[in-house]
Length: 100
Image (tube, rainbow, N blue to C red; front, side, top):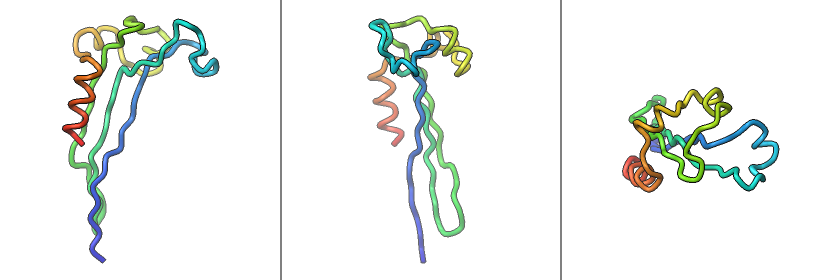
């Protein structure tokens, strides 16, 4: 049987604060905003699978532009990284669409 599949697996990181997940981001100031979108393009065939490409964009949050120490410690994504290399959400989605 000749199998050939191509798919994308993606992962996201978003703003968070101590206890925000348990509270379901219910505080009026808590908004889940993407701060990273990452993905792998994978090919699967009869002989196995391989990663063809990778994708990663850091995204500048708008509502809460300053990252909490909690999310910095959790993800390793720093405020400096967001400030210097972060892009807008529309730009990240545009790039991700092209990647896919």
